[in-house]
Length: 497
Image (cartoon, rainbow, N blue to C red; front, top):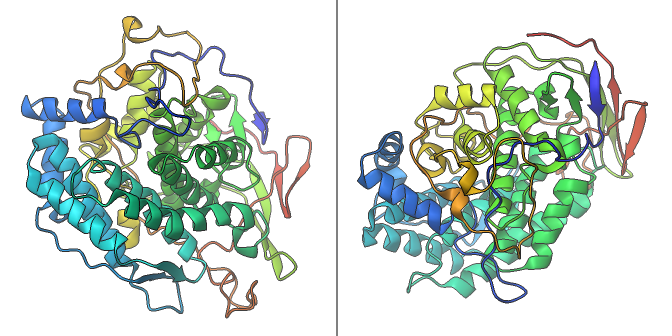
């Protein structure tokens, strides 16, 4: 039976907590901790020390990094004035994501080894793009490009922001103009679609971009918008919409499990990325709403390991505001291919089991199955293989925090805001076998009906996007409006498995 549906499931009371989020170490009202997106200074120091010592599993994780063709110094950037993604456009976005991953991997390799050639390469790539890029265009898929590559760009640049040759102000302006602004607009207007038209991963990609851009550019209002959307947004990326049902066995149904495996894994990876970046600024979203994200991640991990998971059928509305409309009913979780891998699990497993000392059986199992994690270029040549930055075995493995490091199991979650003064000791590390796995499918969604006219009157821009599907919600009592979208949840018997 349902424990909760489309609603809050209590507070954080009773969550095992063994650390608090790292506090932003700024002095001014707009300052954030830097580096402070996916990796803090403590994280980077831990990676370097563990690799130098040859410690497992860091050494294996680092070997995956050094073997990747993107992580080689001397990578030559291919910047474009306009990047296009989507049908009906001269797509060239692969040039962008390959260069971003080269910048990130070289920057990460520099922090581990201290070899300046890698930092110089990352800076050269980032400077080339900030001097050249003027716009991100295309079909509705341009919003996927803005979200995915915006948050990744910010993370690559964060690792070299103090390099003497890095054009920081110019990069901040380029990032805000071409990525952050577009992602902000998507979360407000959803490309003219009803609120449930775009699946969970679309929202989450753009949420990650808004958050990462806000932190990178020290824009506190932008960060606040991203965090508020995670908690209270009307779209499917908000946590109670992405995980609308929590069952008595502690599993939280992931909305896109009813769609397909690849997009569900993409969404879990993006929500983990969002939570990690927020955590490194003192904002605890991992523990929000009784650790709802953990319940959703556990559900997806069990499902991907071949386990039976409960599923509550839903019908969602899709289409354009004032334009074409339709609906779709999903009655069961989609099938899975155990060979599909995404590098998303090490980050999640290490947070819950090592930082907090909480059990996360399925997440831990799937993380170990995929170890050591690689990164962009290791999971296929298409865009889906570049949706996550990866290398979690190297970057997120950590020792379990003891009582002296911030609490004991059974404590309550602490959620200091960005100006809190807690230390970054939660990042202290040591070997842990957890690593990540999940499917390697492209991030673009399935097309909407071919007969559907364009929502914007521009040759099917909305209708032909990969995500012409959405969900509106109903709580346990029946139906709930979602700003123009509507989803009915139908009760099903609880499945064991």
